[in-house]
Amino acid sequence: MTTTQTPSAGSAGLMWAAPAEAPNSGRAVRARGDIGSLPSCRLRRVTEYIQQNLDKDLTLAELAAVVCMSPYHFARLFRCSTGVPPHRFVVRQRIARARACLATPELSIAQISRMVGFGTPSHFTTVFHRVTGVTPRGYRTGYWREDRPGREGG
Image (cartoon, rainbow, N blue to C red; front, side, top):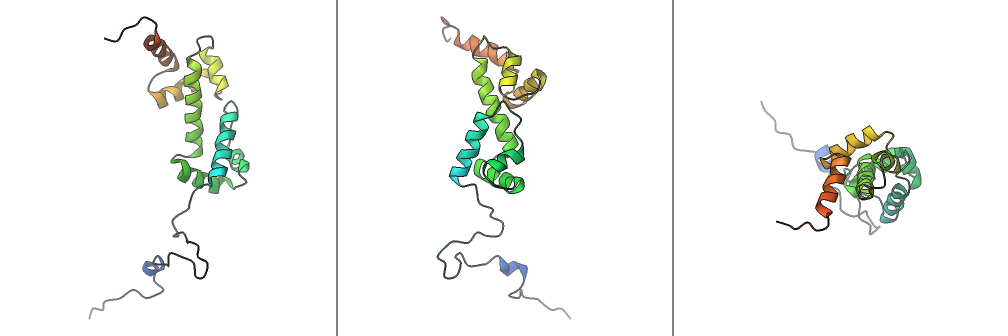
């Protein structure tokens, strides 16, 4: 004897079919798995803080405190807002600033590594190479080679 079960109103399959709006509120309700994103003002505040403090050790707890959130919740919303976790965002910002600094031949690679928040030049070189595919020295020489006056394309 085989019986076919149909989902009851209390089964998990029907709990996701909740109405799109909260009753009598006029406000949309998020689905259970939708965590949202950081409000633009908070995202701007934390990204400005990151830019101003790239030379320092930036912890998740410190970044979360800038926008008055718990580290776990902040990390989830930050990733939804930017597409990358906070640590990866910080690393990318450091590499972007390093690229700009490498255009200045007066600065040594060790100085640049400190300016963008890396503890040692070797760690900076490793991360720079992982992100860009070229070492800082290679980037610098390639940058100047392309930008050399009098060089004709051809």
